[in-house]
Image 1 (tube, rainbow, N blue to C red):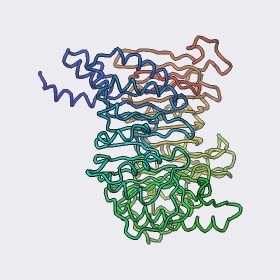
Image 2: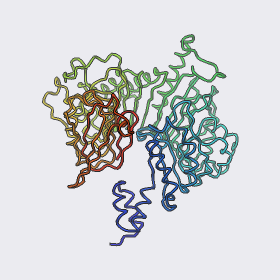
Image 3: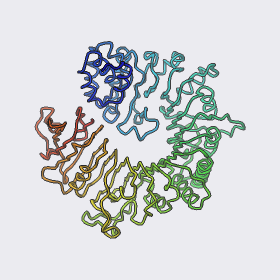
Image 4: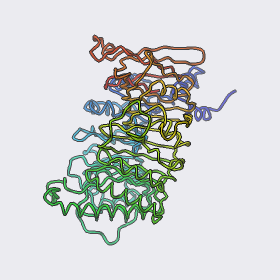
Length: 604
C-alpha cells in the first residue's frame, strides 16, 4: 500500500520516539520522514547529553539539522552549570537554521505557567540570546541580549512567546514609544521578570503592552515592584489577555491591583502572589514591619480586600491560583473569605481549577476548611493544595486509624466533595509528614486521572476506624507522581501499580519504601509507559544504589544494569553504596539520565 508522504508524516507525529526508530528501517523515504520527526524536538536533560548533542550536531547532515525546530534544556541539572550555555547558543544558531523554539524548562513544566519558560535562580547569569541570529525563532525561553534589542524589530513581529527582563521592557518603551503596526503583532505569551533587583512596573507600561501586543493571551509577571502612582481615570482594556500571573509583585498601596483589575476584565485564569513593599529598592519609601506595624497591617488588609473583590468580580474566571508570599496573611484571608462566600451562596463560583500554594507558611487548617465547606470544590476538575502543619503528631506506621493522626483529606469529608476531580496535587512541607492512603484518594475521586503526592506518609489501607470493610479502589490513573514520601508497605504500592491498566506517566523520586522484599520488583510490563522517572529511591532506609531494568517486549527480554554512579566513573564504591538493587520490568525504555542527587533518573 502506497500512502502519500503527507499522510505518513501526519501519522508519524503521533508515534513515540522508540517506534520512530523502527519506522526508519522500513524504506529510504520513510527513513527520511521518521528521522526528521525524531529530530523535530530535542530534549537535553543534563550536561553529558548537552555535550554529546553539540558534538554530533556539527557532524549531522543539513537535512536533519533543518528538521530541528525545538530545543528544550531541563534546568534541574543544567541550572547550576549555566556558564557553558554562553558558548552553546552561537553554535545552535549556526547549525540549526530552522530553529523555532529554544527554552529552559523543568521536568514538571506541565504544572507551571507558562510552560515554555523556566526562571533562573536569583543572582545567576541568564545567558542572554542574540535574537537576530535565529531568524525563524517563534518561542524563546531565554532572556534577550541587551545590545540586540534595537536590531530585533523585524524578529519581534514573528514571536509567539518571549521572555524579557523588566528593565528591557522599559528600554523597548523608549525605543519604540509608538509603533505602527504593533511591535509584537503575533505574541501570545509574555514572561516579564525582575532581574537587576530594581525593576519597576507602572500603568504606562501595561498601556504600552496593550497597544503593542494586540493578540497577547498569557501575561506572566514576576519579581517586580509596582511604582506608587495615582489611579489613571480611563485605562484601556486589554481584552485578549485571558491568563494573568502575578508572582511576587510588590505593592506599596492597592492602586496597582486596581489597575490590573481594570485593564484585564476577561481573565479566565488568575494566579496571584502579592507582596507588601517592605523590601523594595532603596530609592522608594520603605515600610518596616516592626517599626510601622499599623501601616503594614493596614496595607495588608487593603490588598486582601482588593484581591477578594477582584476575584469575585471576574465573571469568566475558571482557574484561580493563590501562591505563597512573605505576606501570607493576604493568602489566608482571601481563601477564608472565598470559602465563606461560596458557602453562603453570595459568590457565583464558576471555578473548575483551584490551586493554593501556601508554602511552609499556610497551615493545614485552611485546606481542611476547604474540604469541610465543599461548596467551592464540588465543581472542580483540578485541585492543587500545598501547605504545612507545625503541630502534626508523630505517626505510628502500624496505626492505620485516625485516632492519633487523621488522614488527609479527613475521613469526615462528604463522599461527594471530590467526586468530579480528574487532576489532584497534594503537597506538604511540614517537618512531620501527614499521612494519606492511595486507596483513600482513589475512593474519593473516582474520575481521577492525574495524581501528584509530595511530602506524605502513604499507608497501605484506608482508615481502619471509619472504613474497615471498604474494598481497595482500582487504579485507573494515567499519571502518578510520588515525591518525598514514605511508603509504609512497598509491596502493597508495587501491587497497586501492577494492577493499574492505564498508567502512562510514572514518577518515584526521593521515596523511602518500607517493608520491601529482599529483592524488590516493580513489575509493570503491561503498561504502555510514555515516561518513567526513578530517582533517589531508598529501601527500608538504605539507598538503592543500583537499578536493573528489564525491557519486556512481546516474548523477548532485554536487561540493562545501572551500577552506582561512583562505579560508573571508575571509582571504588563509597559509603553510601548499600548494595541494594531495585528491579523494574517495563515495556520499553529509551535512555538513562544520571541524576546527581544520588541515584539514576530514567526517562522514557
